View 1 (cartoon, rainbow, N blue to C red):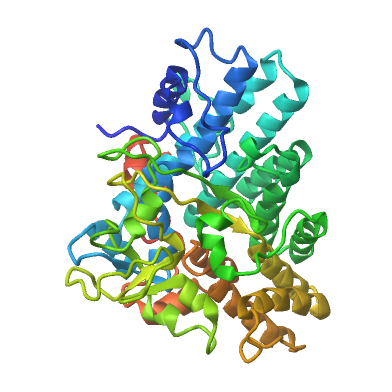
View 2 (cartoon, rainbow, N blue to C red):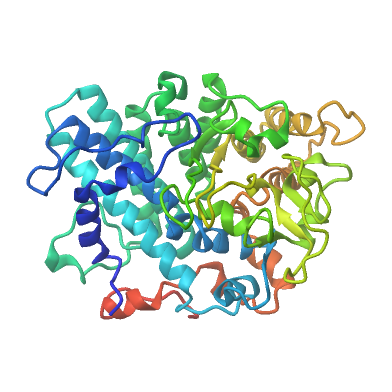
Length: 502
């Protein structure tokens, strides 16, 4: 019988105690904090006793973000492919459960929902173990507080994803006893929001700024990352004043800036750069099959065929391509077309009869590498400074601060146009509704194919308005929330209730 996400907790304890997770994930080409191998054999009786144990347990939470459940089809499928930004791609009969996401023919047994649910709760379980046990370790107090803050940030981020997809959730804040496995029920959204908010406030208090970390620890959670996700939470709640406040704290920190060239954000040169607030990192591993350092995020979106060996999923849609302003360089930096010369000088195959359309996601492209399958490079960008500037523009427009809203959106547009003053002119709109539409449009152009679109449509209340006319299979209000995996409902004996319509 398939394990419930609750029972997955047992496996997570064993996994952590094995000590094997520490060195299978390395962040970036120069980051070392996850490349620290534990020594000797660990058991439950000897774990959570030393400072190293605290570090390893925290690293294990980060590591899970590179798992298949957290960054492959389950992540891309219910953020990009389910939205108007992209289509399934690949060959017609490959991964049909992903096609169900694309055309809204899915039900509660779809594999993507089960895997996303399991992956995020497994990460939450790891965070809970660390948060509960690290405070009892005799170690450097400042480091102890920081590690707990990192885990609270990561736990909050997992819940923030889940609540936007599924609504009410089981709220699990500590390791569970065996008699609690099947007694979990769904906690209302408002309480989930409150929990996320408190975790993020705690993280802000405990975490350093990005510039305070040594180079070997770049990629760890920071004050800026926690403030950014908290700002997004307030925007979801339509608390625009607080959203503006936390965006402003990031802007005024001086920790971040826009890279001069937009496209560099998605190349190796931009990894953990000045614009990066939070990203999940990796490094290529030369291996004949899938294994350590696996990066399925890039592999499944890569250009299909030799020499790229990608799978060709998550294709930029016609709707997205036609949405850009004339001459906007961000379209070229987002979409790979047949015949295009790529940054490494290679040219993609002119025609591939296996593919459904002639486009690929430029932002997920990485150069061909010696390892096959998913042993490749390529960080996953979670939060960029441009995202915060656009959130700040949106929040300030909603509270009537038009001048500041224009300043922030025009910063993003100016970077995008570069030296070409004939495109993307500065906006001078003063009408609140009209400016809102331009901010929404620029968010799409700036952040397309970075897994933001579904969440943006949800918080704007526009999923039905946008997806209904595009997808005959879309049903409102049913599809505004995604279905709770049926296996979780079955294993709970009905204690977990399904979302309406499924």
